[in-house]
Length: 207
View 1 (cartoon, helix red, strand yellow):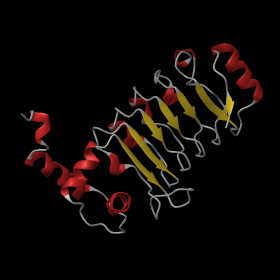
View 2 (cartoon, rainbow, N blue to C red; view 1 turned 90 degrees about the vertical axis):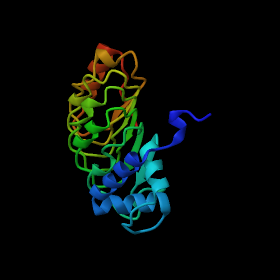
View 3 (tube, rainbow, N blue to C red; view 1 turned 180 degrees about the vertical axis):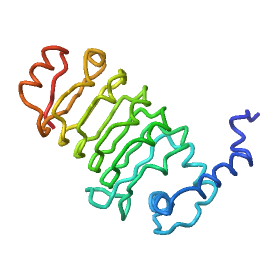
View 4 (cartoon, helix red, strand yellow; view 1 turned 180 degrees about the horizontal axis):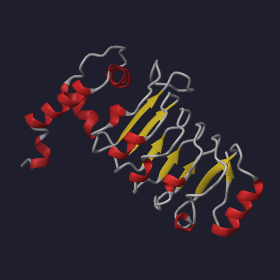
């Protein structure tokens, strides 16, 4: 006997998926077409693919400059992931993303990969209180303060940015943070790292 959860999405849910699709920017429509159907078009995806997107625990959008891309162009915002309530792992690397403000709308994320973008601020990430992994290397981030209350973090890769202070990472992270790759970083001195390691017992690793 099928349970309510086994019966699949209702017509109301499918209508929601279709309305979500209509609100996407042309760039994100093309992105989903390339990633899921390998076609460079902005056509609406068939209902089974829309369902797959909204139930996907992980999504990967990798720009053309990466070693193993699955897209032919670069995205410049994160608007296409808003309202994906099942998403726990998001990969958007080698694009032109310059901020993470919209990431606050998917607070259930556990792993976020946004390396090789143009991100200057981590503002928005403070909403991801269950975040375990953050890969934001090769951007232009200058402050780690938005990580202050993200105590579930186990891995942070923030090397090759513009960080000159480790303020925002501290004693509250010491129990869970196993890998903290913050070197090299413009302006981050050896003295700062040594003081940080002695104070919190978190090793500053080079990546």
